[in-house]
Length: 240
Image (tube, rainbow, N blue to C red):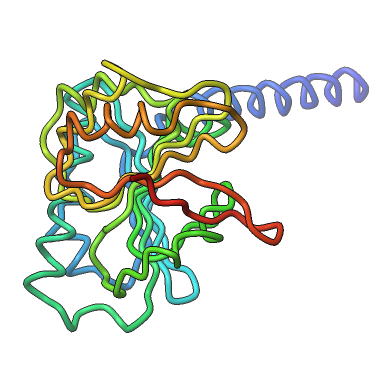
């Protein structure tokens, strides 16, 4: 009898444990996880208010990382752009809010275990050796987002093309397996006040002058650079 009771208790325990596991797995992941000391900024730019973008924000060592997972196609991308534009507006209106040298990155992906599609950042980015050559531009420091790094293989550029204008002056195009050209570059006209475009197609041979001309069809006033190497590091080469 005691053995039977013990078996029943064991079955009941594992049944309850199984139910807890199932219920835990079915609990939806929160859309907003904002762990930052810069609460006024987070509130004003709408990090807690997005409907089509999951937001995960956390502070680092004089840095803020905001992970953005856009959903529902174009609606999610528009909302993502609105958040970044709101950040730049906030910095314009509150120039002394952030400490000097803070690094702020908005990282766009489709979630955990998915590749990064784009990174919008203000100062430096460790992805793909970009930090090797950004200093060549000699841009002054600001807490505003002044760079966007776009992985052309993983980004749906039609969302950018059909989205809203975003104010980012430096556009970095990364492509490892091909050199985007022609209509693939149409989305560039959605970047307001663009100043510089970097062709980071470092692993391929391509017609730099031809793609430079195509870029200028959509952004006529920008400087265009390709990425080369010098002394084992990546560097920028200005296109004529």
